[in-house]
Image (tube, rainbow, N blue to C red; front, side, top):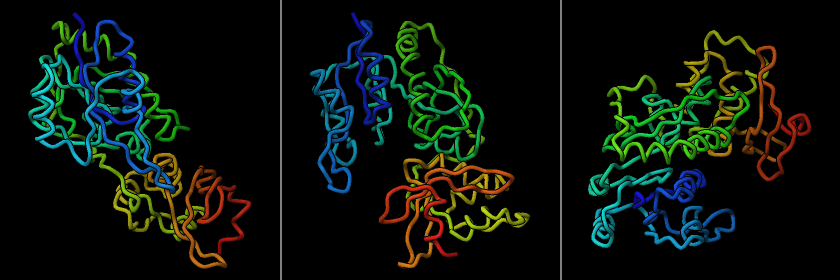
Length: 318
């Protein structure tokens, strides 16, 4: 008989892992747990997430979560469904109650796109890019009640491409996950893999969920980086996330160029500039470093379409 799997997730990354099991005759997707449809975009159109769409397209029963996966909802799942072999959690975004962690017969499993114990938390790819790490890994772990601290079932290392944004980072990592997952779960169920405990302490800060304010950088700082000003005494930035990363880089141009890629598309590195029409927000969409100076490539000023910086720079006054 195939191994039964309940999958909790939300995004296209979840679907990548889910599809790998769906196509493999060794597995049966018994149930999906995913957020309910939410308003998306400026027009706030109620939209189903990719996992919900997958459930409908493939006639898989699904439990829709409103604001959190409550103990009551978890108990309802346990009472209505047989014990699965695996609970797989991928890009879910909600805490998993203790009762569900104890539900599967083999193990609750999580896919984490970092070289654990490095970059525990919900934004590992963003922090890998922000801190300019050259190597990372895709980790498959057994979940416990601690943040990304469960025993490691398997890991595969990869080189971080210097052109990646978080989008390319996650796509690459989860493609590895899709390739590794079926054999890894089958071997775990058959007792052919002995998970390795993680150290309690991580060598990196927690890769916490990012907010819009975390991606703000002062225009005076951006201007100084563009001029290549002496940085022996770097400024204190209002964003605690960027300020911590600056102490790692010790270079404003490098920090800003890395943050541009790390924060795209969300939360998006942004600043506030003075214009003839008053102060305007400006997103920094692309940048690089040349001769120790920051070079802005592409930006988007509030109320305008994305444009090359050289085309709009006269609109901004220092």
